[in-house]
Amino acid sequence: METLSVSKKVIPITNYQIPKKIQIENLNLKIGKKHILKDISVSVPKNKITVILGPSGCGKTTLLKSMNRLTDMYPDMEVTGKICIDDEDILHSGTDVTNIRKRMGLLSQRPYPLPMSIYKNIAYGLKISGRRKKRFLEKRIRHYLIQASLWDEVKDRLREPASSLSIGQQQRLCLARGLAVDPDIILADEPTSALDPISSQEIEKKFLELKNGYTIVMVTHVLRQAARIADYVIFMYLGEVIEQGPAYEFFNNPKTEITRAYLRGSIN
Amino acid sequence: MKGIILSRKIKNKLNATWMTIWTVFIFFIPLLLTAGLILKSSILLKDHSFFNLVTSSIWKPLSGEFGFLPFIISSLLVTVLALLIAGPVCLLSAIHLTQYANRYILQIMQPVIDILAGLPSVIYGVWGIIIIVPFISEKIAPLFGIQTSGYTIISGALVLSVMIIPFILNILLDIFNAIPKELQEASLSLGASQWYTIKFVLIKKAFPGVVSAMGLGLSRAFGETIAVLMVVGNVASIPKGIFQPGYPLPALIANNYGEMLSIPLYDSALMLAALFLLILVIAFNLISRLLIIRYEKRFA
Ligand SMILES: Nc1ncnc2c1ncn2[C@@H]1O[C@H](COP(=O)(O)OP(=O)(O)OP(=O)(O)O)[C@@H](O)[C@H]1O
Ligand SMILES: [Mg+2]
Image (cartoon, rainbow over all chains, first blue to last red):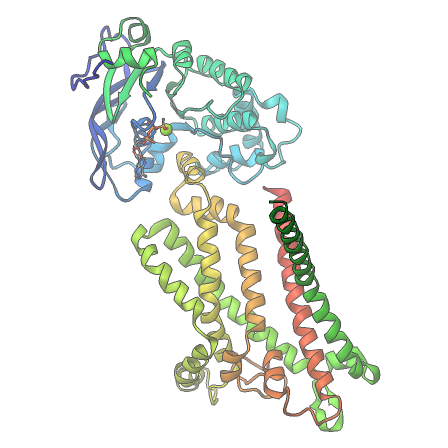
């Protein structure tokens, strides 16, 4: 039985040729006396897939949601620090929070289609942005459904309720819906955990295609999935970032004992 | 040993039989009730046409004239008005309590709502006489240039609305709390404001539940007797406005049953009133159920 000491030191990312998209500095998040995120400083490179890893309850979802200011939904959450997206601090900027959110698409652990038709699920975000012309909407909806590899399956049933789709199709619909607000970041919280293996693969494949145009941040439990698609890894443990860096180094040359233990599967 | 097992078998069998009997009994209660009411009221229907009874507004039991229209209209007016007042109040406060208010406000409100829901209706009636009736007669009616004692349709509707608010609100709170946070997060992440999300996602998702809550509230309001009877005036003519007295069906039955039964056909007429009440409540239930089914076919 080895003892796991949590090192406070964060290992910096080496060889940073790629521009950073998201830069988080000294982010702390508390609910009452509960300290959920502890002094987080990470950077997310542009047009890459960054995977957030860590055991259950370590704060992965919370970190992801704070990038989108969904933490605003919980009035008792106290958030301090800096989250910069393209050098704009979204925690303290005067920009309307809805504009900040439009820059990021969100995929959650299970798909939550809006209670309306397939068509309207995608039109929803477009309409919020003031696009209402029918011709325009139809063209864009087709475009995003193709982009999410769903068009062929739903083109004849666009007016049916979104809930009539299978779970895997619903998750791709949620992806299309997120892409429709024209974000440059995709936040995904264990997007494949409710899906069958084939649907999971489709999402993974999609992400690999999309990363040319989008910065993708994905939370996952599944180490093998992370190894398959991650360019960069952020590893968290008990609310802290233990290690971050290129995926290759993370998997082949972990720098802390606790990371090694996690990779061996002896933490969970 | 064998004896014990045997007796247990008998006990099980007995319990099962009894449970079946009770279940069947509960199932048949509404049928028995309806059958009884039909049987009793059929005496009146023998020499009065149903159509006449429903459309006539002349109520002179002594000369054998039973026109139910004033009672039916009073009932509908009081109930629908009560729901028009209570419905929006409940919807808005359910949204406020579940979406905007701090969590401990709901924790304070919950027992208050439960107490209000459990108060005996006679207390609401007394409160209506002490507060609502003078308020209507001295403050509200004069605004419209109307003179009234205050024992009016609107007083009944106000008392009734306060009575059904905790009932409807409790159901609505459950419905809104059951909607997953992630659904709202999905809408917010697409750039929707919180109010837009509530309008187009939350209420839409909750719609079948809201309809059934309102339908249940309506049914309950329809049958409420004592509190309404105390403030509504009980005059057997068609009310020509909400500042006029009315005479709802339950009040008619409660006021007269057991007293006026020496008048021929009177008890049969009251049974018919009860039958109307039953039919209308069932109709409300069916309509709200149909609405829900139709909605769920479109968006589960
Ligand atoms: N709204 C909230 N109120 C109170 N505590 C919360 C809230 N949201 C999260 N937490 C707590 O914060 C911690 C981190 O939660 P989070 O959901 O971010 O973990 P996670 O890493 O995503 O876990 P999992 O892998 O199980 O999804 C947990 O201990 C959780 O109980
Ligand atoms: Mg999580």
